Image 1 (cartoon, rainbow, N blue to C red):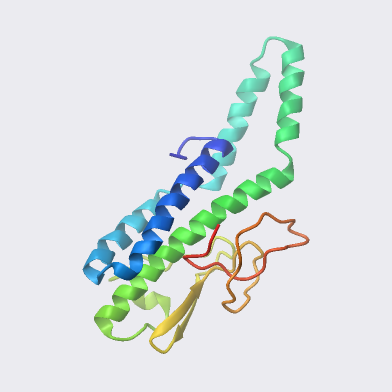
Image 2 (cartoon, rainbow, N blue to C red):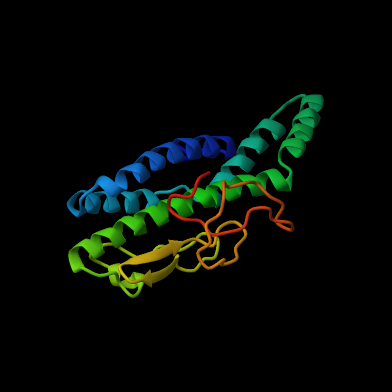
Length: 200
């Protein structure tokens, strides 16, 4: 529902996505590999069709230009411009982008988590690297939107650590974060890494 929309449309879309993702997270332990594999494929399709943040910003700027510059009344033009400047400060746009990136990261983590469970069930062991999931279980290794590198994966006997470095962009070695909080980039209050089932 975020496709073709502005920032507010994306934020509403993220709320709906979080609701659906939360329900799926609760189901994972109850699913069999033959039920998981089609879901992995669907989640990869959703990820490939996910709206890009650059598109959201482009739509936002187009919408503002239409509202501001097409007004025939100069007083209305000034009012609209002031409203735009007040509502589009850098911190609010940065916070919206962070919410977007959190959603992208959790979708990719969820997809990789399910693929790992399929691999372990069928192979009787965990893979040494995420690229061993390609192409049978995943089309490609998911990247972390906060680092532009692959998601962090560390096998641990019959289990694994799989996480994103999260909004603070530092690898805390698999330390779980708390509830995601908006923060000042220069003074982060939320540390820890992001997992597929991390709370929002």
